[in-house]
Length: 211
Image (cartoon, rainbow, N blue to C red; front, top):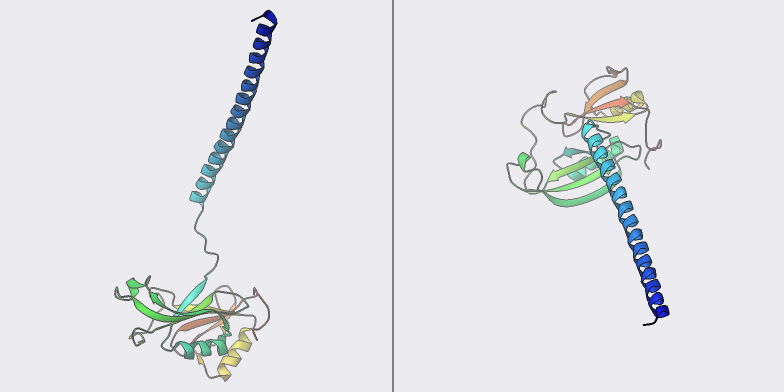
């Protein structure tokens, strides 16, 4: 090999080494950048988990209130007429597999309707046993008993609702009075003995009655 060929070979090797180094250097930078990104993400995630762990429980709303009845269609007709719960989200037949603690460990079939009012608030899951004959409880529910004892119905005009229910001869338990927060309210029972509190509220999703 002549001198010129040897020099060309060395120059070629230099260029190859340079390419390899640049390639390695670029890969290193990419790996390092990825490490920094992941490290930052991990730190941020840890901070977020710590933040979540320190947060206190907060209830922002109730999706639905279960209303057990003896006759679903009769009950829903009543709730549509008097409470305007006339938006049907679903209606189906199913097995209550998550309620075994309340059904003596037996799976019970049921029929249910989830009804809403467009002015907002939680829905009514009106449901009826279909695997057995529904039976009313054999005792009077008292305040302080386990469970949700009273459902709340909001309105802009408590007096108008009271007068309407009175004219319809519904089971009104009290006259209109002030609650501890100074809002007008009264208590009533529906045709199945479920207790409801009708009270003044000014916040609504749609300020227009369903038609």
